[in-house]
Image 1 (cartoon, rainbow, N blue to C red):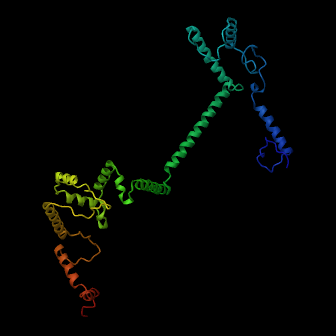
Image 2 (image 1 turned 90 degrees about the horizontal axis):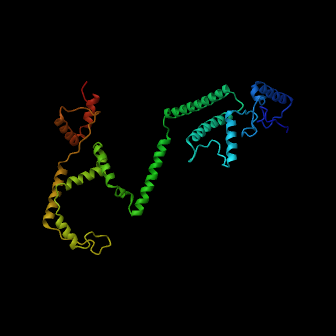
Image 3 (image 1 turned 180 degrees about the vertical axis):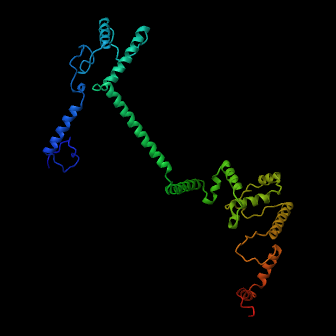
Amino acid sequence: MGKSEPECVNSSNPAHECNDYCLNKIAEAKRRLLEEQPDSWKGPPEDRTVHPDCINASNPYHGCSEYCFKKIADANAAAERGEPEKPAGGSGKSGVAPEQADGDDHSGQQEDAATADDGYPQMTEKQKKLFELQLKMNEARKANQQAMVAEKKSMEPRGESRGISKEKWLEDRKKKIGKLLDSNGLDMSKSYMLDTQDMAEAKYKKWEKEPAPHGWDVFNQKTLYDAYKKRTKNIEVDMDAYNRAKETDPEFYREASSLQYGKVSRVAEPNIDRMVNELKERDEKRKAFSRRRKFNEDKDVDSINDRNEHFNKKIERAFGKYTLEIKNNLERGTALPD
């Protein structure tokens, strides 16, 4: 494989081999680049004054000014007095006269300006301004590109990844709750026991805002809890008798391993009567309860009011199977004479 010049435009092609045409093109581009350069870039200026003790004397484009001569004189005077040489750009320290400190600050600013100028020694003032403007244009173009990408992302519709992340979050939450339940010896049905008081109150407030349950949802935890509160609202509890019974019986809260498990404890007669009365009241309410039926709009209207509708339903339940054929004949018109 032949050699490929790095200046060639086809040098990135591994199968390319430079020939005379490529070499002529490279030479022509170099010659054109040298012609387009300003005169100040082609060589150091001929008429320039450089002191041999200047720190920038090795720079072929540097010309000493009044600032350089002043710094050289200060350095020579300090060397004669035996004082250590101050670092470039240093400010005045303690024990220095205010005039000298001000002079050092001014000299530091001038040295910073000279250093900034030495950053582009081959450029004129106009070229420096043009270069700075190009840098600002590049920064503005980059900022506009980033803003355009951010706006495009905000306008795009949300994909299905949001739902997948939600499912993953739920799975992680279930795993975390499962670990807590296992450490406490509980199953998933007792997960509510891990809730704090604030979390439980927040759940109850959320339940109060939800609509009334219907269908099989009437047997959820909220309705059962509301029914329990309604049943225990009018029950009077004698805390003194409860505490006395707990003190007299060491196994008041019995477990399955207790030897007294299944033993009938002595209950006062008033408590038994109160329980019986409460069960009778529940039985009466259950008999008087009537589930609210859902209205069917597609059903044929065969009544004039609610009472007549209720009566027709009773008749239909009793004699509907016997009169079904007669009703169908009447609807088809085959039961009427010609």
